Length: 536
Image (tube, rainbow, N blue to C red; front, side, top):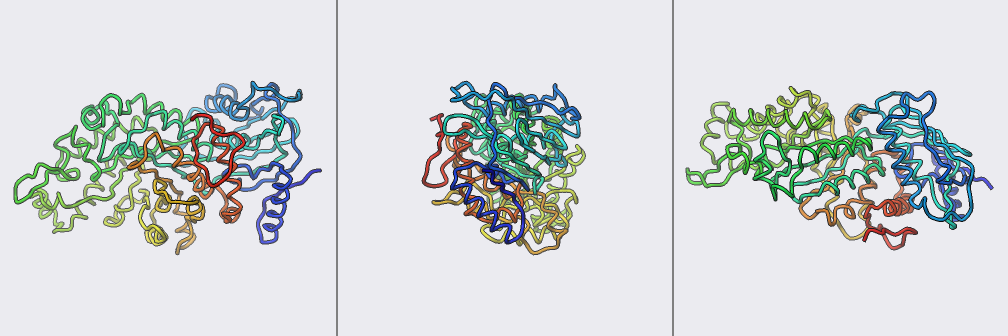
């Protein structure tokens, strides 16, 4: 018997699709709906082919622009072989002698580069008897196709590996699909970050937003200003990220098609900076005399901008991505308001008592510094709230408007012609009893009042894991598989992924795959996995 499942659009096609899926699930058969996030289009058949690890090969197509020696794909072949056959050394119940070859062809030879905002992740995958053909524009698309193929392979009741006849045409809905980790409020060991990058690749996330420093600690070890971490980190030796650590993270991410976007948030959220750079922060006053406490970065001193220029020269030379996040959120004006030198500067500049103008002055100066270093800036939406004259290519990061008013923020900012990233509905550090992944799954980033041109300015979204109550002990189960719900929203066609009910069994299955791959992903609800996590 052969049963074919084809994803298409339209009411009747959707009904037929659901009916076929129900039949397939009842028959206990495996389909391409096991791929998470859901491909843009696919045709899956119940015709299946056995695989033997001993006669399974990856190879390059003859016309591929990349061949053996491409570090990204050579490493990916090794990695995915282990993911596809986690028990390859185990006992196979019957022999499968026929070879199976996965041929990978790439149109553009970008093997030694880094993924960027324009990188194509489009791929097509065709699986038939004895072979699979994977074609992609770039190596980054090939990585996404390898991930999809790996999820198609499954084991029967007697341990034999199978893959079904499948056709997939796929590409991401949004170009920017990020995860933010906060490594200041709790230090995250490098190993925990690398494990997160692995899991991100399984869900086809492509940007790691590294919120590396903040008020509590400054773990980034600057080569130019070593006191920033030696005095500002929780511990100057054990709780820091050396230049070597950063390069390791960037390299690990590149091999998985993931960009690394650093954030050095200022002028607020900088208390830890002042420990290693005492003249950087604003002295606070009480009753006309210094109180001994300090506020945000001092925006009136030339030395502030000389320091920032030197620091960002170092940061931008270390982080290769063309984007950098400059923060700009939640600035408390109390200290600035108390300082007589700040007050005099405000009068001189004609700012009156409007301290948002002072913050705008500071942020414009910082954006100009990074622009001179050929970096595109991302800032939190607070900067737009008080300063609409920021450079046109600056990206606004929306974090306000929960639970339901972020649509208003999207409409307002895109109306001004600014590109935006949506984070507001995906603050995943918040937890609640029950299946809160549903809330993340049902977000529609372009569902707001605006023109089609405005909606095109939404370049993607981001899942944020702030670190007040998160460290390496609970990072992974709090993040996965809840973040994967947002991953499908950012990758897949919204018309094919509207039903939480349809998504639930697929996400359950994907969660089990994460466990099998060593990711401590929490359960969605009552049930069990065939392969439970063995790392406890």
